[in-house]
Figure 1 (cartoon, helix red, strand yellow):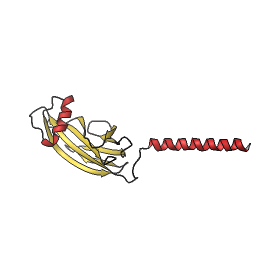
Figure 2: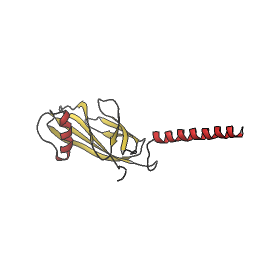
Figure 3: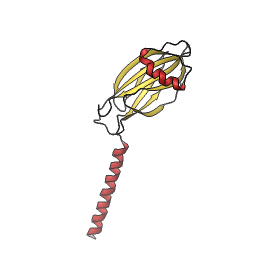
Figure 4: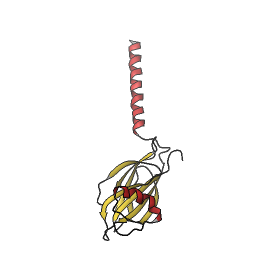
Length: 162
């Protein structure tokens, strides 16, 4: 009888450890609860007219043009970096009194990806995981009064191992 109770207790402890390990795996690791993620947002206006590409936007323009070859001109409207804690939601200025809302879901996980959600003008919430250190361009459907398309480029840092 004693051995049976002991084996049931051992089974319970084993199941508890498996459950706790599952919870730990479900929540991406952070160095510390106070870890911050540096987020850089670039607000770009693209146009089918002209050929001017701001030199800071050359690589972003090349990526965007792969799927949107009609865009010929790229202008840097606004660039800002902020240090955010996971769970922190912020608003960023955009164009024509529009704002962008962003939420850091989690800091860099074991695959060096940061989770975030973005609410851009005329778009539903986009929730994604992004690799550290690279800009992700988001071409929105928003068009300014001057017929320029709003493009966001978002980068997160720091990355694990840096």
